[in-house]
Image 1 (cartoon, rainbow over the protein chains, first blue to last red):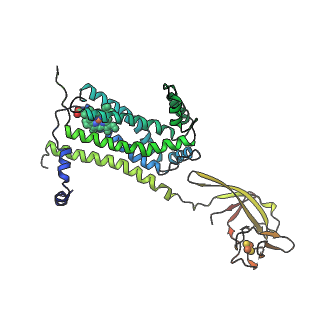
Image 2: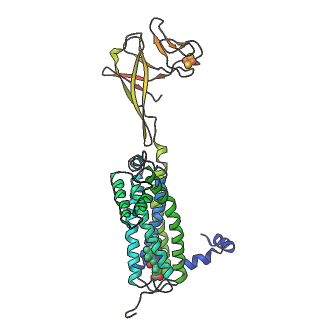
Length: 219
Length: 157
Ligand code: HEM
Ligand code: FES
């Protein structure tokens, strides 16, 4: 942005304060393991972009789901690529979130004053897995169907409320059109809404508390 | 060229990498959104109707064929009915059997030598011209060709 436009906007919005706070803040001397959170963030953005693109053609009904996924993969220009990025991005995200968390544990970065950062991170971890679980059903092919039959079945062994939990997850006794439609709504509306809130909180806290320096020997 | 300091280099490199990633999303994304628009339906698709020697000279014969229409991921089967006419056994013409008035099915009446529509008494000649009744124009014509003794029709026109 040219300085004049930037200055004009800054007078009215104060954007430079935010920009400098985020990008020009002081950080301790760190190593590559500190990029894992940002790497996860890039994948989150990738999932949002490619996910929105998939909803343009995907239809969450038992008649259409498989046919639309097939249409996306084989009939549209770059459809295979968009779907592939979303598919592999999902796995990459689980992996990166896990590694990021291991790094935080290894450095003891969850301690005061970063407990809330850690707790919001726990929420993000659960969300990532919930995204993976609900998204896996959406192609409505044999693999998707049976993986979800088995996955929801695990709820049944919960003491006392097992039967009930299973019925809630499936939206009935069996996997059905209801399950597909519910999983879709959760995958594209409920989880992203919570994700955006938690990512916002997480990043705010990272900036506000500053990044922790790698602990020294004996610390 | 003036030597670039480390800070400037890194900041430019960051912008360049961000731009590359952005393009990596934008190009396939735009292609994906626009691709259904570039699909042309114009290509003539020839549908087999049947043997040409089934058509008697001067008498329209009704052929029926099943066609699958695909729109996006939805395929629907439809039946097409075409009257094929020839006056010399070499030149063939194909007419829709849908009345141009309100869409009833016309039928060839051999002893009158005319197409007759039962709904409001529309009458068409052997070459599809309106002879009597309310139809506003002649029967719709489809391109027809004969190859290896088989009649093909194209429904695109
Ligand atoms: C969607 C998932 C997540 C995203 C996008 C994300 C993003 C980030 C980013 C960009 C940072 C800056 C420092 C760094 O990259 O190491 C960070 C720090 C942090 N993250 Fe995450 N994170 C996610 C999940 C998690 C999880 C699962 C945990 C742990 C349960 C966690 C705990 C933390 C903590 C405690 C810090 C502060 C580290 C420090 O100050 O050294 N995050 N996160
Ligand atoms: S529909 Fe054929 S004459 Fe009216």
